[in-house]
Length: 280
Ligand SMILES: C[S@@+](CC[C@H](N)C(=O)[O-])C[C@H]1O[C@@H](n2cnc3c(N)ncnc32)[C@H](O)[C@@H]1O
View 1: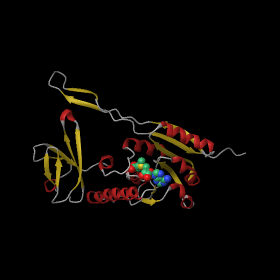
View 2: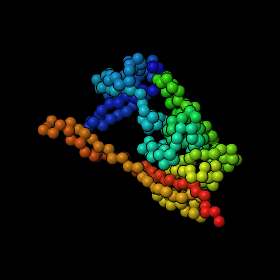
View 3: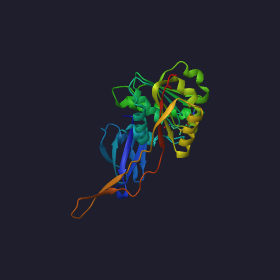
View 4: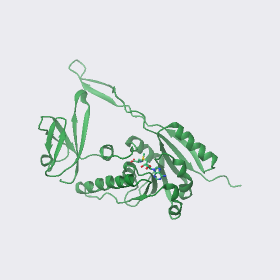
């Protein structure tokens, strides 16, 4: 339907997929490297339909999944990648109904996954210091929700509060909340820990997304020197090894093996558990 998001997928040389995202509008056209496809040809089709572009290429049309949307939506700062987000959600053991704090909102990728994980009874508090990132995260969230509502019976929950504020100045906000979990994806997560830890429930997890291992060392050093009540339970890197399966014209029907091009490093994920020191 007009207003919904559509994902067009085509196969290029060596079977490499190309994914194009658009919001359907009656007068618009989808441009691909192999010609155009008017949106009016897509509107009214069921997801999973294959259509041809003006240049004769085949496009498979369907609704994007959430991970495809966040990879293709407009970006300000780098997003937390879906492969890492799923590991972070597991680290924090998030349940429907939970209250979770994230910093920073960035482009809003993590916020959307948190929104889905905590569900309509849950709450996400998303802090962002920069006005432009705050606006973009809200816009990406709004676009996903409005497109979702056109294609589904259930509404997407309106459960993310985007807050334009430096997290290190948010101590007063924290007095009125109890957090089931915290996730930090920002340059200097050390500055957030003293502010958020009093509101994190005892035994709760603060998961931290950092690009460099030296940043992880700085984080742990700050926890030690400031005697913050966190134990480092795990530091992981999530690697996916992509494989290709190519048809052949010889006796074996397929050759399947790791792709020549692999995704590079994205982040180190650190799991911090809040504890209560021994009673003396
Ligand atoms: C890498 S981005 C986060 C990306 C986000 N997780 C996503 O998936 O789209 C880091 C964000 O943290 C914000 N940030 C950095 N320091 C901050 C602070 N002290 N308080 C709030 N936000 C902060 C930055 O402006 C930036 O937008």
